[in-house]
Amino acid sequence: MSSETKGATGLTGRYAIALYGLAESANKLDKVAEDLKTMRQMIQESAELRRVIASPVLSRGDQVKAMGALCAKAGMDELTGNFVGTVAQNRRLFALEGMIKAFLEVLSRSRGEATAQVISAKELSSAQISAVSDVLKKAVGTKVSIEPLVDETLLGGMIVKVGSRMVDSSLKTKLQQLHLSMKGIG
Image (tube, rainbow, N blue to C red; front, side, top):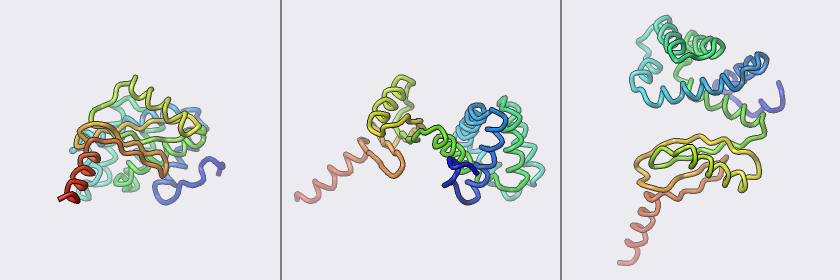
């Protein structure tokens, strides 16, 4: 096991490390990472897909067929399709999102990058993501890979998480703080 894959543990870590090794030996790290990000986005956007993944009622074969068809329709690499098929065959689809996250973390560590989760009220444009990335690169001291998420309840601003550090400049949090300080006045 290479030093950059250490730290990934548990079920999701084992699958992520195995996929990383296969993708690295096939020189497909970027393609697999792109496919997995697409898969994660599809899971987040489709309640029906989440039901297929979580359903104990669907047979192993039905899950394998459904995920295989999804990977093929999305134009994913054969390695990614085989990985998702194996996960489905082993009845581990419930952990697929965790495996994707672990794979992307292992990939970032191997490249000397930090991963930042940026949660905003609206989807960020590529220029905004680039600006946030530049600021974080200066603050962290290394290249930062951005994982943009949307949470409309924030109202405005953003929450940035890099490792164990978090900066919350969301309007929602500021209003909550104002509310609490107003309670203390009366």
